[in-house]
Image 1: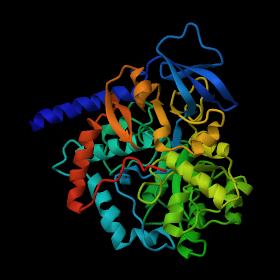
Image 2: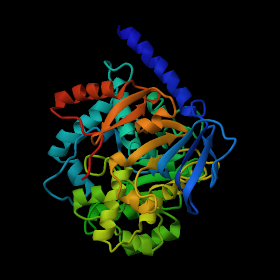
Image 3: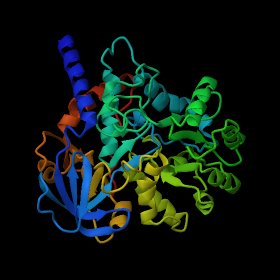
Image 4: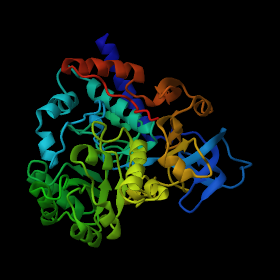
Length: 468
């Protein structure tokens, strides 16, 4: 029986490789609704999808386009591009520490964190002799990618590599685009990407050999974007404040680097970032949960630093990009004097991170020639950006990756005639494309994860956090 299961899993991995090309599964389709393009909003538009890409965007229904015609009655947005996440930890329930911290080193060394997140998170990712087929890793991967996708995220970063060769199992080739492992942009396999993740710049987070490799790849134009945690702590905290100088001293302050968090940075550092073309990735919810405040994005914006928005992770951040965008809207309105408009926040979650990663010619906008990485949102079609910043999880009605339907409502998914698995989202019946679930039905994955967490006396975190 075990051999039979192993064979099925290997066959599923071969299917994933096929799935990663996506054009082989993408259907020609005409999707209509309110279309949000880079230049304007079409109150009534038609997006023609062919071979997984946006073939045309029309103001009149096409006469000769092939495939099903789907009236969404919603708002058609580009999929979110999440440049800061730790997906493998998104199986855990929310962690609410009783105190605020001076820096990330404090909570990383905390016994409570180690017990509830750190130890199980690290151990469940590791391959062992009893996990010949990467069952645990792939279960986690499927659960957390679905978690991102049902919030409109079609591109994500941060899947852990576990130091293997190849660095990650084949299951990362399905569902969302993994920009640092397997996007599908640079071949069908894993490990061809041009986005690099570095946890930090201190010796404990960035070993000298890794720094040497990254520096060389940046110099040789083999990396388009380096993502690195810098200055995650209070401005008066010495350990956090010196990290910017360490980044600069390592020669990594430049136009191919994006600083994650930057909570301890001030106006002078933001001016240096702007002059060097270094970007900032803002994750406000996690910042407030852990430190009680967030990055000085007002100074960053004033200095013309490019800013993207990302959720960080579920334990202290947001469940996905849609939830983080809603949270950022509240922060902008209540604490920052409406520093960012609804359209600003939309762009900080889509076209701006795509531009940071040099993939804006592929995703991040509803534009002719780009991949059909899209989602449909229900809401006030006359105020699409406001509808987005106030959206609830159940408002996402359809998600496409490369023209392949991954998730959506019964009505919209049924139009594609795919085999579906039902999933409850805040009391509403929604559906996943069963062919995309390369580790098997999500219900089975969830059951196994519950069992994997039981020895740690932990419950599986929610797939979504519902809002009132």
